[in-house]
Length: 198
Image (cartoon, rainbow, N blue to C red; front, top):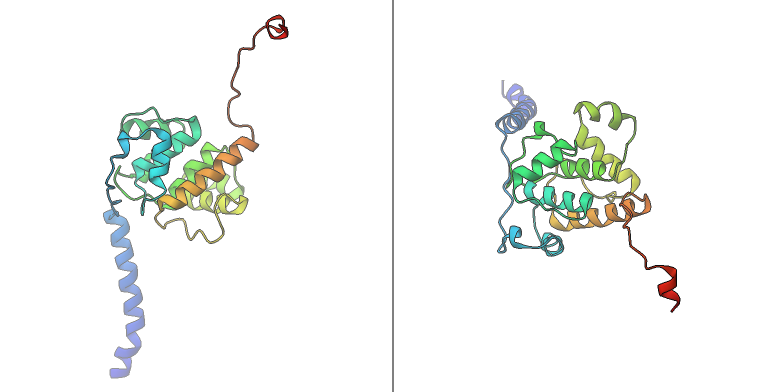
């Protein structure tokens, strides 16, 4: 009888762990990113990116703002709802994720947004399954690791993102966008040649 009980412990532990994970996924338990000493809304975009570098965890609102700065060169939105609406309207974020503004954001969500900002198409899994929302963040994370925007030791897609990791990703994504000529050319009005010759 005792031998049966002892042998059942590993199965019981596995079932308990699975039940716990399902409860977490269904209940939507989320980690709240700690508030910093500075209100990020009071910072200009460049100061905001410097502020992000020291964050232990990045909130969804901070990630949304950072991705809009990457995509547009500036944020210009005043609220989380405006940022979320803009990103969802461009299919750079999805409402199905149900991310709250103060919720710590995972690496897969950020990878998906950055991949869309950089207009990276991805591989077959990304195009087929990711376009339906099945594994969209996981495949985006893998794609960014594959092309070198995320380091190989970046962990996994469902881990929470730190500020340093986000700033590093933004830096590499910025270089990628510049090489791919995704930034609009700035038109400069040149003086007439006769005025320069004098």
